[in-house]
Image (cartoon, rainbow, N blue to C red; front, top):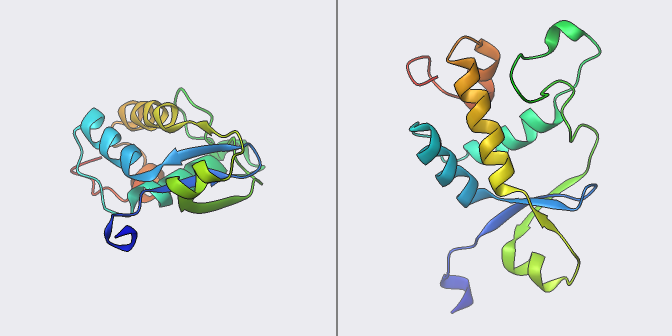
Length: 128
C-alpha cells in the first residue's frame, strides 16, 4: 500500500543539515498571507530566495531578511521524502516554520512593489 500513499517531500540543505517540509510550507504560507500560491511555488521560491547572489549591492531587496546574498548561496540540496529523511538516522533541523515566517515578512514588506519578488514568487500583480 505504500505506493498509494501521498509522498510527503522535503527540501534538504545538505550543507547546513536543515530541511523544509514542502507541502506544509506552502499551506502555512498561503494561510498566513491569504494568497493563493501556485502548486510548485514552494520548491522554486525556497531555492531562489535562499540562494540569490550578487556582488552588486544595488541588487539587495530591502526587507527584514537578507535576500542577496542568500543564506544558502553555494550550498548543496536534494529533495527526498520525509520517510527517507527520518530513516537515515542523521540529525536534521526542521526549518519549515522559520521559512514561513521569513517569506510572509518578505511578501508583507514588499507589498507588491518589487517586480523581482513578483517574478520569484510567481504572483500576478493583483496578488502581490
